[in-house]
Amino acid sequence: MNLIDGKKIATEIKQEIAAEVAGIIKSGGKQPHLAAILVGHDGGSETYVAFKIKDCEEVGFKSSLIRYEDDVTEEELLAKVHELNEDNDLDGFIVQLPLPKYISEEKIIEAINPKKDVDGFHPINVGRMVIGMPSFVSATPFGIVELLKRYKIETSGKNCVVLGRSNIVGRPMSVLMSQKAVNATVTVAHSRTANLKEVCANADILIVAMGFPGFIKGDMVKEGAVVIDVGTTRVKSDLTKSGWKLKGDVLFEEVAEKCSYITPVPGGVGPMTRVSLLLNTLLSAKKEIYN
Ligand code: GUN
Image 1 (cartoon, rainbow, N blue to C red):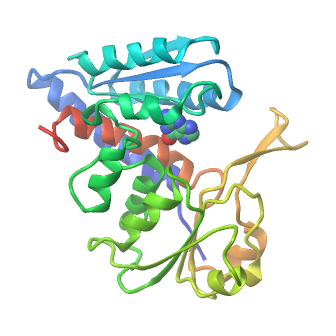
Image 2 (tube, rainbow, N blue to C red):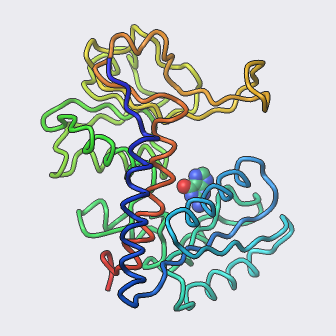
């Protein structure tokens, strides 16, 4: 079994980005700039956004954080999105999800200029991705494809099962895996899939994004499979200082011994998701997706 070290690869990519940013600035270019809008004080969202700001600092990007209390109106938020759309210094921005229930996430996402949608959530970017046009791609699937590439894992002609069909992970993941650059044969499985155990056990590459800790057991995985665990559920733990630990969707102790490659949680997919947002922002700054 080989452990896929997402943390190490993400650190390498960050160094590559930092070197590129230094080059841009040295040659008189503009410092890449990412902004994040954060509404309310959800613990998870606070942590994710703090990481995004820290990541920007590490690679030499400018970052801006725009905060609202969770009584902000949809109109106020839409007005801010329109303002950021027009801000020529900004290469990209994200609106951290989830938003309070009374605000339509769809409406907010659709209001973002696709050219600045470095989350890759806008229907224009999703559509462009599906038909193979240049697009911003959602960070987690983007990071997973990059991990497979950097570990030189064979994907062509392989049976890939993606477990989960969310707009952010499962759905775009399934599309990327079937594209010509990757060439896998893809099955999208989900909570209503019949014979889920057999479907999973047929996968050469199993990508699990369900959000059920420890869901994938040893008997659901083929000998020699590549297993990518997207799950990051916070569970109570006596073993950590914070009293919490992250648990993946894969029962690592049973599954790891059967795999050729597996991502750990933490330290697998998570760091790649973070670095992918930086990559999208750099692509935007370099006008490589849209001119
Ligand atoms: N909430 C959970 N993941 C994400 C993400 O990748 N982007 C945004 N904007 N919100 C999220």
